[in-house]
Image (cartoon, rainbow, N blue to C red; front, side):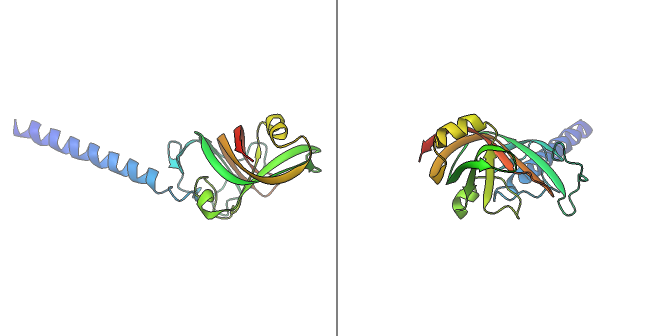
Length: 171
């Protein structure tokens, strides 16, 4: 009976210790800054859940954490941010493109990002909706927006973070 009691006691203690370390791992990402060497699927960063960690699709650079040569992190969940939009023709991509820049330190905390990605800049993965929302004429200004499906993309190439525009709250 004593052996059964001690076995059950230690099992509960080990289970509890495992839960504590999982919770701790999730809370280390609360500043918004993502450490590619530490982030794992299931972690929460600025209230968004990590759903994928890999190299940037289509980039041939080594998938490495050393100098962060090539990293792609996908997140799920909605977030509302304030920042500045720019709707213009992007000569590199050869199309109209809206980008969004988050510069305010309090707003930056709302978005996962690498340390070297401040201010946070992203383009919209649904460009037709974004261009319509911020157009019809080219221009720039300030806005508060709701986004989801945020992604970090970092490589020694023309890649940018992205997010799906859900709606423009104010502009």
